[in-house]
Length: 126
Image (cartoon, rainbow, N blue to C red; front, side):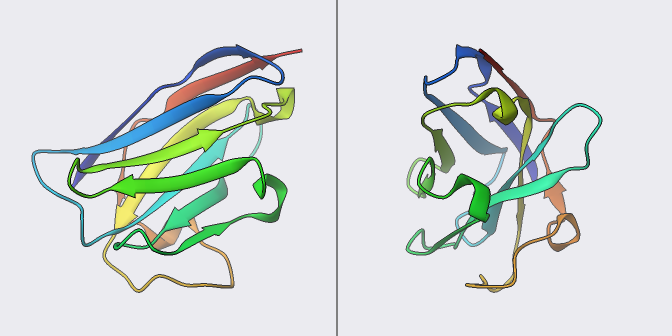
């Protein structure tokens, strides 16, 4: 499934953004969906994942309390709400999806996901 992330932009520190991820041409209601980000000069890192039902979510420690992942399967969209933005949140944010059992621990890796979108840029000014 092809994915499209949107909603990025230039925001002042302390502000909020909501990123969206939607598939092209098909539903992804049976997929686990994840968000990753890649800052300039750094490796891509996992941010958050949500189960196919939307009832379970998992976050990397550094974003807990500020990031919220959610999904609207009827609307075929997954969201990543980012609050209290910091300059270190500046990165390209990617959504990814695949059909596998959601995990409640152990983290997620790029290799877990077979479908990716081109990413959306988030820039946080201080």
